[in-house]
Amino acid sequence: MTDDTSQDATMTVDARVQAALESLPPAEQRMARFFVDQKQSVLLGSAAEIAQLAGTSDATVVRTARSLGFDSLSALRQMLLSDLTGAPSPGRRLARTLEETGEGSAGALRHVIDLHESVLDVLKRPEMAAAFERSIDILARANRRHVFGIGPSGAMADYASLQFNRIGLPTSALSVSGIALADRLLWLGKGDAVLMMAYAPLYREVEIVLEQAMQLDVPVVLISDNLAPLVSGKVAETLPIPRGKADHLAMHGGTIVLLEAMIIGLAKRASEAALDSLERLSSLRGSIDKAWMKRGVKKNKSKYIGR
Picture 1 (cartoon, rainbow, N blue to C red):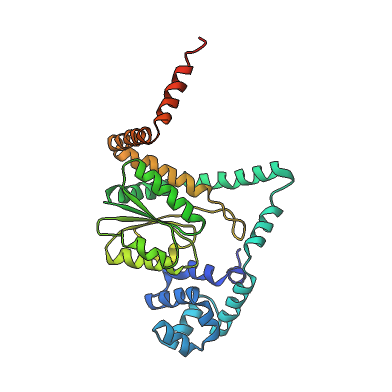
Picture 2 (picture 1 turned 120 degrees about the vertical axis):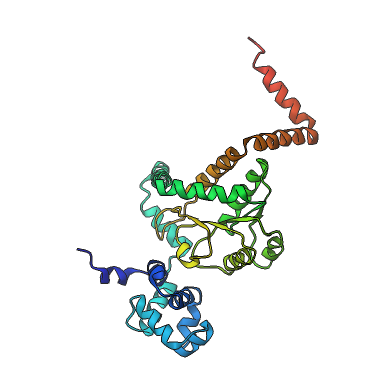
């Protein structure tokens, strides 16, 4: 029999919030999100000060802490401090990954393959297929798509945007952080859709994109393995793709597989337009670089030389 109390003792505050969020009343959900987003304020403020910052009552602050399994606000603070001081750095995450990798480069290859095979098993599940189908519906119907991702996800957002454009689907990449994101959010309009790659904690850029999407009634498809509980009600569909093992180096191979499946899925919805767009791309390449077309011709002719 599982000891739930023992399990709770090993969970971070973020993990407790994710596990309990959907079962909490709305006021406590908002407070729980505040615990995750404003850790420093929770650590330094009294119940009354936290309540004032969060726009709620001090009773709600204490009640939410208890709903999350803490005896008191003080106990919540102790775990927050432990989480903040004990959270593994990128170096420590890599070290943990290396500990499980085995000997030599071949061991690293086998370890990463095993991780990605487990992710592919998730992608094969019926519930994932259903969520994928709904996500393709949302993206295919949109006037324009916007792919959000910052940090490592920014490179994937740029890649997805490039590929969607190549198959004739106007798409922009929301792949910058800070105030530079404001310029790109000007592109967002009614009838569009957002494909978001984002992970906990809830960064300000993610909050702003979600706020803008809600104001314009723009549906958001979320790719994440841990953010969904924190943005409940703000996204139209979630595709939960694992990124390897907890507290280990994050792996993005599964996300790339998903994005490439989206490229094919969207092209299949409008195959004639996708093929026309790729023909236009080839023509434009030839117009820019005549030698590019000649190289292609020579390559084709070489098949027959020497026969």
